[in-house]
Length: 68
Image (tube, rainbow, N blue to C red):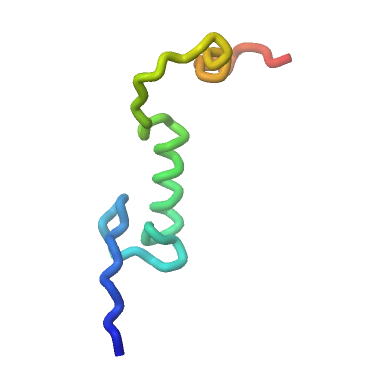
């Protein structure tokens, strides 16, 4: 019988990871991670200067602006 490799701990809370939510231990930790991505806490650094067409996709949108 071969031993199972030890699973990495959950990157959010440090508990053992669950196979169902891997690499997280629970749905809660997976949602916390997703929320961090949505809020911009995780960023991929870049040295590339955005072009004019990229700018319309990267500017912040004011939620009070009318959409139309």
